[in-house]
Amino acid sequence: MRSRYSAFCCQDLSYLQHSCVAALQAEQSPEQLHDFVHHAHFVGLQILPLPKLTQTANEGHVHFQVSYLLGHQLHSFRELSRFKNQQGCWLYSSGDVTELATQKIGRNDPCPCGSGRKFKSCLPHQPSGQAAA
Figure 1 (spheres, rainbow, N blue to C red):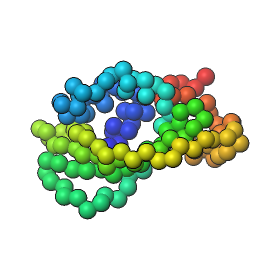
Figure 2: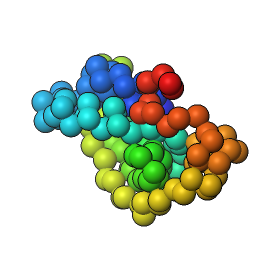
Figure 3: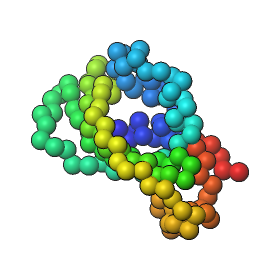
Figure 4: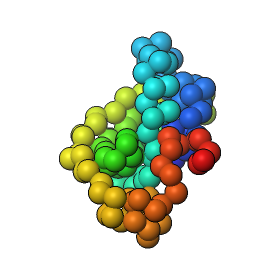
């Protein structure tokens, strides 16, 4: 899961596509994924404890929370992801997503990136993978 989060941060659409099972690769819209990763600035990944689930050699789960900025709003969601082991590679197969409340960030609020600075004086929050001006 951490490698997929990093791929979202770095806008590595190829990795995101190839780290999914074949059926999901065919269903995903590259345009929607492209738009999302080019407008979001990812600021946090937290791995959460798993609920009681059966893990096998061929199927596993990851429970996590992601936070990202879109403009002056902090968006977060939790997901319980399912991964399948195919030929020694763990591939994302599906997930149950729970959207969390969106928070508006004021200019003088602490930046959610964890820098300790006010939002207005933190590094410009350009979409992940793009250099700051």
